[in-house]
Length: 292
Image (cartoon, rainbow, N blue to C red; front, side):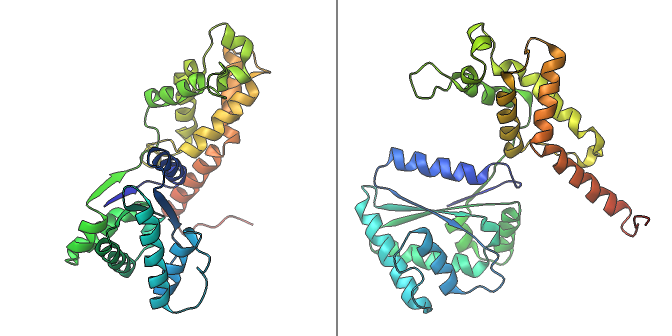
């Protein structure tokens, strides 16, 4: 079907959960199964099938070690939940799919075929890191076009934030999304009601916030600076900004910039940049040692 890749902490796992919720809302009765991949150093079919059965909340997921029995158990379960759906379909989402080996895809292909013969379509989505792109090229070079056609016809990148305009769109949701719905209380209003009533919006800080993230990267060599802002650090920063709004004079430029700088530092973003700097330094001086 399709594969999506992106760097760590861009929000892939959160995106998977939101996709699951959306699919189950749009198509009541549709089974959406999310499986976490592990580091399968030695590919064992029984262990792999057990992981999927566990994700299905199957009562007997861990029973026995026989791969044939686990395969039949899984196929019968998927057929059952698939036929109960109006779409006669099951969605299987595999997170950290870069850990999968060729044989895992071969096993999944067999399950696809078994379900298809029983009138159930299995839609598989692979989500992982950049290695998924390399996996697709590897399969093509090995003439395993059948696996590419089954699982990786389309490969798309899951991006982080790339500019202030994208950031502004996200902040606008904090300004407009109400909880509970219809209450008139947005996330921004909840944390800064007085300023909100006077027309202030978090989205007005989008340029300032973006420039602060860009400024934080200055100690990293330009060629090694991250080109995108990972969602994990952005969300943590916004949380800290919102929590600090009540005690901050947001009309004071110095105070607002201090709040933003503190929020970015508390998000872990600066620590991440420090790691990048240290890795770059280690590549330049691999044999250097810190003086005692």
